[in-house]
Image (tube, rainbow, N blue to C red; front, side):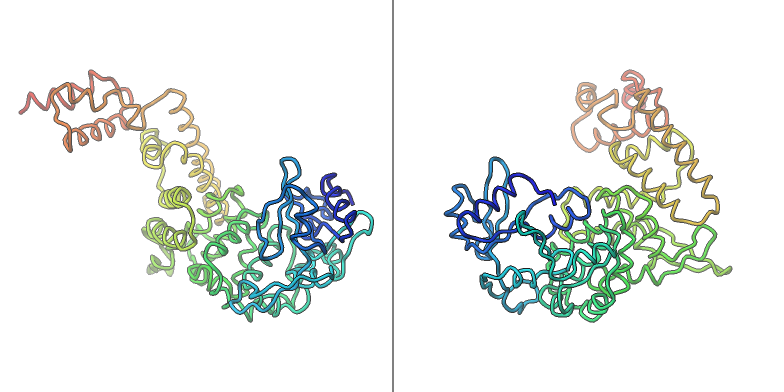
Length: 444
């Protein structure tokens, strides 16, 4: 197994001082899968103090848990002492940490077999829990007793689904049964930790694995709205899935970008609240986009997402079912409302939404989206005005013409912009001033 020169050198230096040392965890898993690890973690028999004596440049990044970051050049490597965790009375963190001289004891406390392998250049691979075999078979399996691992840290249940989504693996039967039993323990996990795992799951190659989180009962404690989405049928020619499965299909059809995947997840969460049945037995969801945007904002705040992400996702959801026509004035209007940076992402959302529906009029709708994108490009190319900063008149022009600063000034500018959005050829200072200022004062 090839490992970076600095990692091999770090291990060799610890061994030269009489200690054991191995690269461990995710870096070994990824290397065996033929992927380039993002980070290389080291586990060692040396205590944190001994590690600090061996290496002149270190940072105490988690010394209470035995972790010291060793700085080699501009790179940092986490070096953690072999340890055994105490009880997890809060279901999140060990009450205590006891250092041990046994690599096997250290590996035994880890979450999944594929993350419980260690490698030393001279001693080779240590795989006490058949991690290699689970990698070959594409299985996510707990180390030892699944219930014990999930009782220690409830977030591991969601991590099981996240790893299956990232790797395209299946969750082993016993591990899945333990999740189904202990899913309510997710209540003990902070919203920040939930959010981080959900983002990794959603932006993975297999975001549809969110259905595994639902099947095991976890979504009830993560996003209860999803349970209602799974129970909400869509009986009309445009749909072939219930709301939840339509959402999973849309996740598969949109780029692995955080904002886009969150938009896909939340875009229809208002449908259970807006469903009406007509006399034909078909479902309709009037105003569901606005309701979904409101519910999504609340859920994203609960997950402690940043305001920029919340604002973008909320706006995309609010406009995801906008009744576009192939008209430039309508395109300019939406560009003004959502902002030019979000217009193409909105088209991506609408395309993915369409691909996750039935074949009924699907091709027509996809062609409409492409036509709207072409109109958007023409608007940019011809530099047509669609936002206030591009208006030929500004506030200072109005003040010089005798308009007092305040509400009236803002109202005039908005009327000018509204007119120009419909008639872009009128975006000339003299023409706008005459129409909205001079003629008004003459009438008075």
